Each structure stands twice: as C-alpha cells, then as structure tokens.
Image (tube, rainbow over all chains, first blue to last red; front, side, top):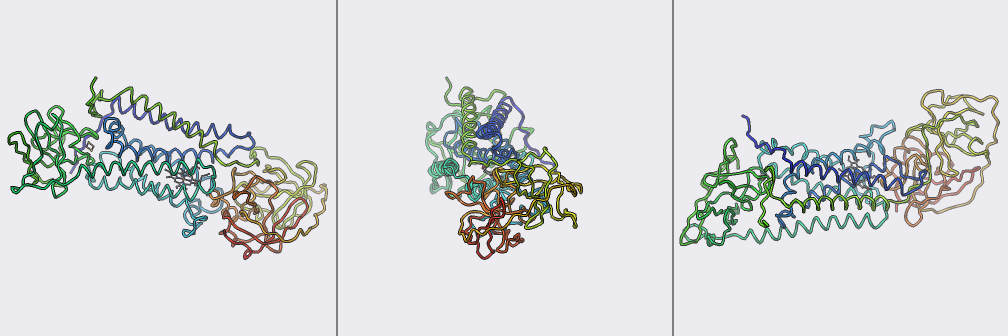
Length: 342
Length: 251
Ligand code: HEM
Ligand code: FES
C-alpha cells in the first residue's frame, strides 16, 4: 500500500533559509582555516588536515547547538523562532555532512598511513574505557555520528509518513543523546589538549545555554499542561468564548493527558486533537486559515469539522464534541474518531 | 503594522519579519565567523618542525641499525648528525633494509626536521638506499652516561614530534602515536612544561633500560601523561632517556 505524504515544496523562503545557513557554514570554516594559517609563521603552522579536522568538528558541533536551541526557543518566542523550525531538518542534514567530513578526515589522518586497517585502529586500538586521561574519545564521536546518520537518512517526509509521527519523533529525540556523546567527545578529547580557557568556557556555555532553554520551555509547558478535571457530566469547562481569540485555540489537558485544541471560528467552536499527524506539532498553537486548522510547525492543514486534511491529502486527526452555553465553551474528552494508527 | 504574525512555511510569501530575519542571519554569520577566528587563534602553539614531502634528495652517510635505522651524516649542515630513517607512513623502514648492507650508503629521502632533531623519510620502492663505496666513514659516537633522571611528560612518536604532524602530541594525537609505536618508529619523551608537552626540540629519545627499542608492550602508555625513572645517556648529538616498562607510571 502506498502512503500519501505531503511533499513540502520548495519556496523562496526555504531557499533563502538554506542559502543563509550554507553561507554561515562556509564563512565559519573559511575563517577558521584562514585564522589558523595566519596566526603562526608559515613553517610553524598547524598541519592543514588538522586545521580542517578542527574546523569541521567545531562547525558541526556549533550547528548542533543551533538545532537544539530552535525547539525550545520556538516554544518560548514563537513569533521570532517558529520560522526557523520549518527547515530545521535541513540544518540536521548539514550538521551530519560536516560531521562526516570531520570524522572521515580524522580517521584518515590519525588512523591511516599504517599497515593496520584505519577502522580497526579507530575502534579497537584503545580499550581503556575506564580511564579519563586515556579514554578513547573517538568512540563517542563514532556513536554520535551513527545517530546523526540515522536521523539525516530518515529526515525526509517519506519516512515521517511511513514510520508514523510517534516513531519518527522518538527516533529524532536521539539528538539529545548524540549531543551528550559529543560533549564527552570534546571533554575527553580536544579539551585535554587545548588549554585555552576559551575552549572549556565555550563548551560549558554552550551546554548551559542548551540546558537552560530546555528547562525554561519545559517549565512553561508544564504550567500550560495543567490537567482540567471534567464536571459531573464528563464535559470539561473550557472558558468563555470571548476569551478565545478568533481563529485561534486554547489547549485543554483532560485527565488522560492527550491534549485537545479548542478553536474559535467566529461564533462557532471546534475541538480537534492537539497533535499534528506530521511530526506531532501543537495544532492548538496554530490558526484557522481558509477554514482549516493550520499547524504552526510546517503548515499541515485539517478541517475542524471532521479532522481530515483537505483533498488530495489523507491525514486525519481525532475530533471532539463541543457545547456552547451562554457564552461558555465545553468540550467532551472522548475522541469522536479514534486514530487508526495511534 | 501587523503584529499577530502567523508563519506558514509553504506560502510563497510567508508572513515573517523579513528585516528581522535578514538581520538575524547576518548577525549569526558574523558571530559564527568571529567565534571561528577566536577558536582558531586560541589553539595551542603548534611546533616548529617541518616536512616537505615533495623535496626528495640524496643523502650520504653511514648506516647504523640500532637502536633504530639511522644515517650518520654531515649532509644536513656540515656537522655530523644523527638522522633517523623512516618510511613515508607510520611504519618502520627496518624491514626494507637490505640484509647485508653496511657502512657508507646513499639514501633517497625527504627531510623532517625540528631544529636539531632530524629524520629522513625514505621514498617508496627498493631503490631508496644503495651502497656508497666512496663515502666517508664517520666514526660511531661514544656513549656518555649523564646519570639517573625522573621526568614527567609524554611518550610520543618522534616522527610526528619532529614535524610530520603539527601538533603531534597530546590526547588528540594519542591514537596516531600508538600506531607509530606499533609500526616500530622511534619514540621520544616529551618533557611536560606547565602540564603540556612543550616546545623544546631537545627532548630525549625514549629507549629501554639497555638502550634498545621498546617493543609493542609500550603502546598502551604512548600519549598518556606519565612519569618515568631512568637514566640519561648522550650518544653524539642525541640524548636518550633509558627506562624499563615498569619504571613508567601513569599520572
Ligand atoms: C568517526 C567519528 C569521529 C572521529 C574519529 C572523531 C575524531 C576527532 C579527533 C581525532 C579530534 C581531535 C582533532 C584535533 O584536535 O586535531 C576531534 C575533535 C572534535 N570533534 Fe570529532 N570525531 C568524530 C565525530 C565527531 C562528530 C560527529 C562531531 C560533531 C558533530 C565531532 C566534533 C568534534 C569537535 C567539536 C572537536 C573539537 C575540535 C577542535 O579542536 O576545535 N566529532 N574529533
Ligand atoms: S508537525 Fe509538521 S506540520 Fe504539523
């Protein structure tokens, strides 16, 4: 059976986005190489492959920070950062490609030119995993690279549709362990040789920023996610219609935990699942455009009346019954349509 | 001005703050470039060694086989010097030495040099070395015992240390140094200065207590911070640190 997936099209915005970050990557690597070459007399410069290994490694690690920051920032300040989320996958693929260049060069340079297979040297020559000074930090890089590879390879919407948003999302959450592995790769590797405070300081500041942004976004989410208990007739009181912005929604958390987005469209209300079929984006933070609930992440659309995407698309999310009494909105927490795949 | 923006990525003209984005992109690119420059400049000092692999020449001198293949030569700068012989890779040239060759020889190789520390990387192929019947016979230098030493630092491969890879010490170079040690390349002991393997080029060659090359048992210690108790011995222009395996302690 073929799967229908929405092919997210190329648009001028997407092209500008990709061009923008490609320029950033090229600028970073070019400046790193140039500054390394001019910092010492010609006969004393760092070997060129070593400069490139470091430039690629630092660039990929920096990109990973950007990728990790976009998610929480888009929750904290959607107007400014949601557009960055749209093409985040391209950043992920770019990060993998730059990291691959780093890893390939490092393997060739440090593990090549001998009669031992470079991969054997890379993976088996130093088994001292209990040590700190002697720890084979390269192995952590290998593990992280594998994770980045799997994520880059499954980044296309084809995989998204075939694996389902739950599996896909779980797979792509592996970016967090990958980040932890790389922090170890840097801590037990380059930071043991590079004594300049800038190296340790920057690594620490980067980690602090990533953790702080995730904590702040998580805290805000927790406050939003407070469970609303149903009344004695099983309905949940959402609030006054007048308090919901037109074409927007409020998000309700029933005791089951599966959130509901209650939309206002003029003087009517509709309730649909808060989880986008694409990557689980928060539909309740979206907006009704042309009569369709539009996901804030990548713009998938659903008709509020039946939860279906307008033809030719075939996505569908559960909907919920609503009631409007004297200007007060109520929603029933039992889904009207049970998602076949969920 | 519209403030309640809603971005829909697939729209031809999505509702975004264009100026904001252009400024953000420029700021990120400049910031990234600034960071790259700062990181590049903060890299620890590389060494002064060099190796121009393309500059292959003929070197005359006297062949010596122990503790490593060596060419005693005056071709570098007129003084009698010890030039360690190696291949172009991380392998010893010893298996490629013709069995009965001795005395004056002619070697085709490129120079790896860090001040007075010298190595010659032989070209590939069998004709890298030939007898040189007319060559001068340099006398082998005498050994001079300089007494016991205790040193803190790092055991590393002399080839990278002399300039084949810059920098060629420390944690990031450990795996490479271990490969060179496995390949049978000369090892050196880099004395730690302020916790880092420093810039000096007079660091001693690292040998076992009898002045022979350490075998593969040394590999796990290469590239780690260690202390060593041994003896310093001078042989001509080369200082040797002689210590047995059990005189090495990891720090
Ligand atoms: C097969 C996988 C990998 C191997 C063998 C490897 C190897 C290395 C080596 C040998 C170094 C030290 C380089 C030097 O100082 O000369 C290094 C540093 C580094 N690596 Fe990796 N690496 C791998 C994967 C990765 C990945 C996936 C990333 C990030 C996305 C990464 C990020 C870094 C960073 C940030 C540094 C420090 C660079 C600097 O000194 O400026 N590595 N790696
Ligand atoms: S998560 Fe991608 S469009 Fe909703």
